[in-house]
Image (cartoon, rainbow, N blue to C red; front, side, top):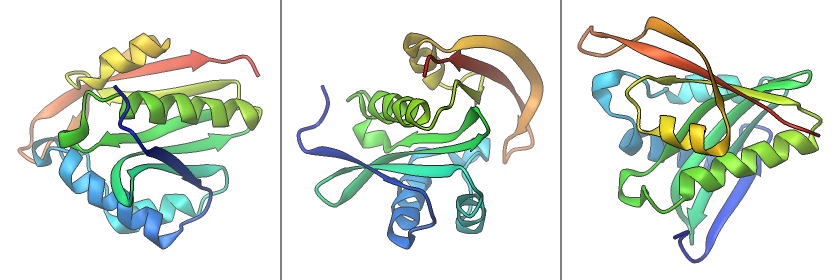
Length: 160
């Protein structure tokens, strides 16, 4: 069930509060073992690129999750999707993803791509939304323990 009072706020530029909210969620959501979390400079740098947007999910003032998308021409890529572990299973990730797809369609984007660690539970979410498996990238991610993890590439084609 979606939490009562859930809001999705989207930013096209590096609004400091939104970046801080995303970093707050990121530190809780990404297991350090896998080394997938970004730093504030990385997040800030991407947000200066044209066609990039960040959506943050809140209940009251508390950030619960975020989605980061970058577009070029009529394609976009879901760069990051994260939900606070205490709020998982409440359709926040799905809400962020569906909202990102809606925004992409409004911007004339016809497809979204993403890459995800093969063992990430989010794979089921992407498949349930309609993303189609494209290919596997062996050893794409290097964890903080030095182990390599495969990535799965997915794509969804959208009607504008």
